[in-house]
Amino acid sequence: MTYADRWEGKTVLVTGGAGSIGSNLCRTLSDLGAKLVVILDDLSAAYEWNIPSAPNILFVKRSVTDDVSLKRVFQEGPDIVYHLAAFFANQNSVDYPERDLEVNGLGLLRVLEYSQMCKVGRLVYASSGCSIYGSHAPLPLREEFMSMHLTTPYQITKMLGELYCNFFHHHYGLPVVKPRFFNSYGPGEVPGQYRNVIPNFIYWALRGEPLPITGNPDATRDFTYVGDIVEGLLSVAWSPDCVGAEMNLASETEITIGRLAEMINRMTDNPAGITIVGKRKWDTKARLLASCDRARTLIGYEPRTPFDDGLAKTIAWFRENWANIEKSASFPRGTSSAVRGVNQSPSHKELVELEI
Image 1: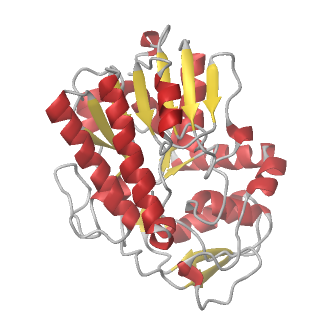
Image 2: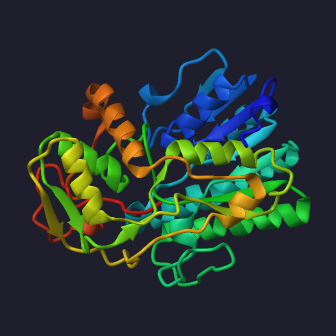
């Protein structure tokens, strides 16, 4: 249930609205008749060409850590706030932990403060199921479990974000919802040094390069198509039963990284195969599989996109936007601690994020 008839005449603020999930969400909100969709994004992990163009979309190129910019966007009087902005992701936070805390901690705190002062109808905080549960939770992952043994600053600040949301909900009565994403993929995510595995694999496959698997090819992830996540995000903004709750938005399907690489090579006609490179110290999860029973009960969520179909749509988006993607994809030398001491190739294929 997306409550499609509820958006007409509404003003919606989407922080991080230029990324893959944000751009797809903003396009859908625009199509559903929202009065105004305000995007706040500093483009540190996204690109202006990926932002939907429509008369009811306003783009403000600033950070959630900039107080003046927050005043500017909250002056628009948002009815709903989606906080998707984040310092992304695991390896990036290991390399730059202070910036991670500044964006994912202080940035969220300021958004919560303005949301409370402006009495927004609901704040939706994008949490991370790949972070909250740690490495040793029983499968399938359920919301009742949490871990204090987290392995990157990104995981820690995602947990911190949920705790701040709980405080504002209980102390001030701010209506918050905390959907937990799992390995999102789909149109709109540009490959790069600190990006997820699927866009990077597709990029290298289309260039005819071997796909590097960090560590164990039998490791699994719960890859979730961005369209299914958007459906869940639309529902949590209006469902009366989910205020204060956290819930998994996932596919409920395990895919091994080895199978993923083989599928992408086959679907792109890439003969270069795969290579195995060293495992990163923080990457301690052998398997990820979520249960969506709570989201199913609270908002009627169902993951509807088969993995083959979602992957085909993502590859088609890459082909349609190849010129922009080639200009934007960035794998600079020597930045990440993940590859110190590693013999780097020109495209630095060791830098692959497996989690969000």
